[in-house]
Length: 388
Image (tube, rainbow, N blue to C red):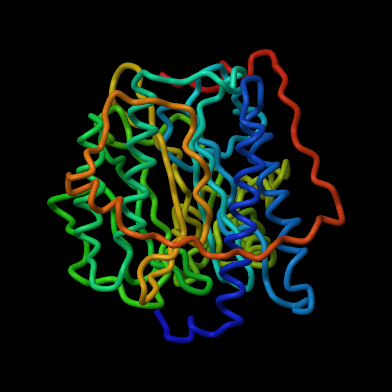
């Protein structure tokens, strides 16, 4: 990463994005209760990100700001990328394992984070079954991984440590989840690697360097972690700015033109561009076939039986003094696993290392209130998603 990241103005924008992500994640998490629509949670998260990013750095009116990755809410065995359309919605049920991911940027300086909660109408209840194992494992894996982002440490050591945490709780690291070096307008930079160990695809043989910023994604499963595409159509897409192709269909050209006019390099919700316009929607297939648009598949753990996936994601700065957590780590949900991490173990010793929390700026009060969604039962909504 460029040494320009030491510039105070750049640091300020990273910190602002991190403060927004942390605040929005806490607000969305607070209403992830039984009876709540997943689609409503996603819309609420995106609306909050848009509102907060408009409220900071107001003197720089021309800079780009907003959602860096659409809010996703992935339930139980779903691994990632779930932001359902109204006709594919799901209403949370008691005991669902709910993964919430938020992303924001100010002038291209990105922060993202994810947290897992167990939806319950009894906040004092403590979960002790396999859900507790995977939530605990993902939480401690993220704490270990964050502490590994220090000068001289390597991605391979991070992957090994996360794998040790997962196996200790009888869990596995899910496929298609990555630790990514980020930069201005870049979500996956030069040092990007799978958090799951793959003997056929080793993490890069490099070391973390002072000034680099990473998003560390620890997504763990009670199953074998092998991902497959779900039955849910992708809702998130990203433009490949390095790809050129002469589209043949008028509908495809109209859609791609609209994307280029209204969207930047960051992923976006197709429904926010095409809406109910069937003419524009008809152009999606050719844009995907030509690789001008890249869909984000909604993936699930393919294991049979009841499977639960938990996720914790952080944005971390590799400082010369050690790792600095930019996004806040919310408190772990009320779970109690029978597995403990001995303080004298390799993982216990890593957890004993310092990991500083950045002092984030206080966000201004929003001028326009963003109303939280209200939990309610919608007939037939739960049947829209097969969680088994």
